[in-house]
Every structure is written in structure tokens, then in C-alpha cells.
Image (tube, rainbow, N blue to C red; front, side):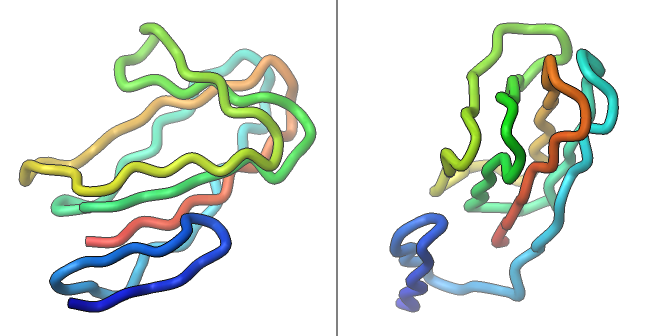
Length: 104
């Protein structure tokens, strides 16, 4: 078992780990939904807003949302299933940047 320590997500233990996907999503226009697709087989992902506004996270386009506040990391681990994971993000404030890291 491999352990990875990170200030973003704490400690993650996993059986195998590949090179993580590290990227950003620019929410350039206010009140516009942006789609984020994680690679097939992603098991853990984390993200946070590096800007000063809030971000609304959804699992379904236009559906209920989870509010992500500035600098507040959010992560999900032990994802089961073999299909790609898609999230939808939007912010009432323009020019927001969301940092993302995902492992398969």
C-alpha cells in the first residue's frame, strides 16, 4: 500500500497510484456552467477555488449544488465504478480559477 501526504487532501492510501492529473479550470464568465470530466477509472480527486468568489459544484447540469468557498479544499476518495466522473461548476463571480488533482 502506498501513502501520499499532501496539504491539499491530507493522506491518501491506495493500492496503486499512477501519475496524478493536475489542472485548473478557468470560470471566466459569471453564472456560466463549466464541465469538468475526470479520466475513466479516477478513484480520488480534490479541488479548491484559488480565487476570492464561491463556486457551485453539481453532479448534474443545472441540478442541486454544493458550495465551495475560496481556499476551501474538497475531496472525494474511494470512487467505485469504471465510468468517467463529470462535474459541473459555475460561479456568480467572473474570473474564478479552480485547482484540480485526480488519481486513477
